[in-house]
Length: 373
Image 1: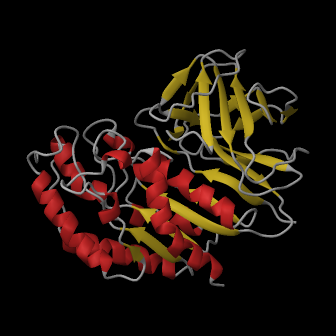
Image 2 (image 1 turned 180 degrees about the vertical axis):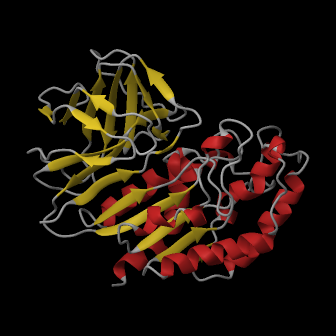
């Protein structure tokens, strides 16, 4: 039996905004997509400047770490992604497991991951090595962790791989949780997902360099194809493009114009062809309203141009067979804004209800692609 990812969420580059702790104890809940009798953890120091050492790494079925299986001490070199020594620890598709990583020495962490929606993945961090952090289940609270990308097991049958990528609509977990639940219902123990979304990420342009947090928004998705094709996958679901239009308005100090629709059409075309060259299908939703925080009935400077270009881009996207026109169903009936039940509260991001709604709209197309062998 071959090793296969049972849960994967890529840590991304926070070298512009690293975190330093005198000690660290972090607890990460992950819900595997696959079952297996043995487990190994994937730990990273891809962006680090010095080795990272965790004196204790353990995995358990309870957040208290009662009855934990010890993985041992782990040191990760700069630039490295490391698979730990396998342990006899059974994972079951759909049942959460808990990973504890303890560092007893001062260290700086550059590989960063987060979520808001806590049902499939969650995390807590403490600054003391002797504590097991508690998990926060409130969906409006960001949960962050470092240098942990997920876990692998040896399933009895190989699973189909699906990429879920894009921007904060992916990384916040709202869309992901909805898709994962539907996947587990219809393809239990048969499909595994690779999460590579980065908050603030853009389709065609890399992160701005003028301020934080914009510096952490990552390379353009069209330049991150390695994230999507290193592991052979059946298809990629990408929620992307909104930040290309909105970020120049939200970050005027970046001195970037709002891109032309033609440039975004070309970027989507390049993404589609780049994935097709590796045998992957692409599924993309149309762009829901893109608004800055504030009074939703009034357009702020620049928002009207953003919305006009969004609508024009959506007309083109809607004509493509690999696009699902989801924007109308997420939009309020009498205003250019997310419907209240779909809105995180900032008129831009999705609530858990909005994430489930978008997942349900995308799922028939995704399910059809997965059933088409």
